[in-house]
Image 1 (cartoon, rainbow, N blue to C red):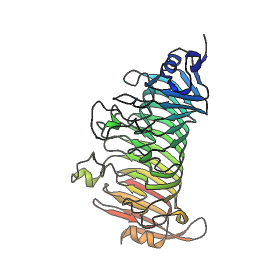
Image 2: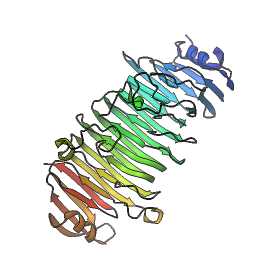
Image 3: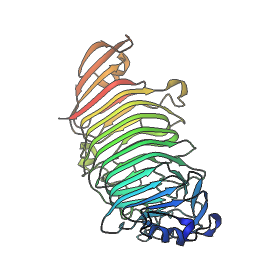
Image 4: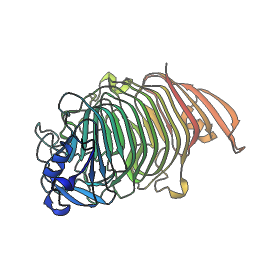
Length: 411
């Protein structure tokens, strides 16, 4: 049995003009464990489907580009897994290459809701156990760059997102319900408006009837390690969206670069065009469940534009054993010194502890409550520790600067 086959063995041309989708699909359906894509420019005019126990190994200088007007309906992508609509795929690997969504003609429609609309995503994976994406450049998506739902056991590493044409709601890795046991590392976005929304979206809950989220599901997200996120102009680094479904055991580290919005967005989608929580409801102001056992370590960030009305850390979901350590605002690069570092509101009563605040930060956040103590940071500078128990309807802020550690536990 042949263990490896090239797409050119089955008719791919790779000149950027001929439609090579049929040759790619023949190679993916051949039963060979490894499909190779040599250097070249490959135009793809139909969704590619990759099945179980298949490695798609793409030359670093190969470009796989969607043909004009290919994404027309629900379920259209540049590539997805064969059991996307039911069943289970196992052990899928995609390595290398530039994957071009050609979003001038392939993007989700301007309307929010259309049951048969395409999502605009380049890649979508659902019902997969054992998934590896490595060394990919993803360019010009017409919606989310990638989507994941019901994926267990995965490695996503060394991914570059590139935008030469703006598209809204342009999440990098959009992770939906029932995703667990994964490693995400070395994720980069260096071009302007990349990503125009969340670099990493952990959306355990969502409005899954929106065009970009069709066929996604709400459900738990758990046991993820995320290390090495960098961007020059992303809207937010990480969103964690939990209304009824848990987000648990998430470790995030080494977040660096520039934002137009937030570093951590946990606003529970209160301010989206299609909010999940009814404005004015009790849940809107008293908290939604739940983000727990989350650690964020070593953050070095700055704002690249003016006037964003959210804080770097916008925390409006109930939290338990939630920690942020070593958070630094890069003042020398900061474009918006008026943007707040932290806002906590619309949550259930919680115990909040800080280490490494300055006296102004501690006084602002405590607002006459809590217990403080004088301490020193690792540089021998005088700092303040603070512990405070919040109540319903509290709103607590820190306007500027960083801190050594923040811990939040719902009471």
